[in-house]
Length: 191
Image 1 (cartoon, helix red, strand yellow):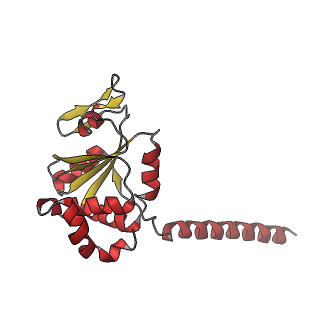
Image 2 (cartoon, rainbow, N blue to C red; image 1 turned 90 degrees about the vertical axis):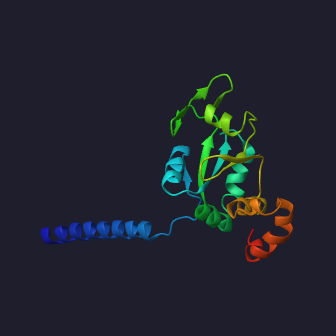
C-alpha cells in the first residue's frame, strides 16, 4: 500500500512539473506581438545621441477618445509599425504627466496653471490639442507638430514623406499623388 501511495505521489509531481514546463515553453516560444517600440522622451533623446534618428512623439491624455482610436487603429497597422520601428524613435508622452522630464540639460515639470507638463506645452507650442503628433529631426529640433487623429494610410504618407526626406525635395501634395503611389504601391493595399 505504501508503494502504491508513493507511486501516485511521484506521478502527480511528475505530471505537475511536465505541465509547468509545457506552459513555460509555450510562453517562451510564443512570438512577440507585432507592435510599435515605444520609448520615453528621455530614452529617445539618449538613443538619438548615440544613433541619430528622427523622433515622433505621440502627445496624448488619458481622457482623449481620439488618442485611443489612433492607438487601436493606426498604431496597430503592421506596415506602419515596420516603417516606424526602422526609421524613427517613437515616444508616447502623456501631456498631463506630473513626473519631471529631463532632456539633456533641460528639466520640464508639471505646470498647475495649464494642467500640463511643460514638455508637452513646449512641443505643442502652447496649442494644447490631443492627439498631436510631433516630429523632431535627429538633433531634436522641431520639424512640425501635427494635431488631430490620423488613420493608418494618412499617417503612413506623412511618416514616409518626412522619414525619407521627401519634404526636402517636393511639396507634400505632389509626393502623395506621385512619388508615394509609386514607391509604396505594394504597401497601399495593406493600409
